[in-house]
Image (tube, rainbow, N blue to C red; front, side, top):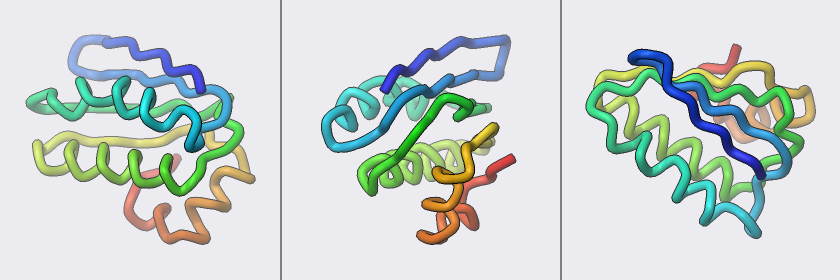
Length: 100
């Protein structure tokens, strides 16, 4: 999993590519921890090149969503591939996390 984080004013763009699974979930958590520490985060996760997420990845997305919501921020996931979106739909995460 490759993670690229760029800030544009108050908005943060996180570009994800590859597979998010048990082999790299710890690194992904390290990558997103600063985002959970922002005082009023506005985050867009661009999933154009994300191929797969495991249950550990789902847990990390949920942690990020809860952190962002608790601080009055917003989080949206965009450009999700159908096979990844299906995982979010089956698990009910598409009802918790805004997906565009």
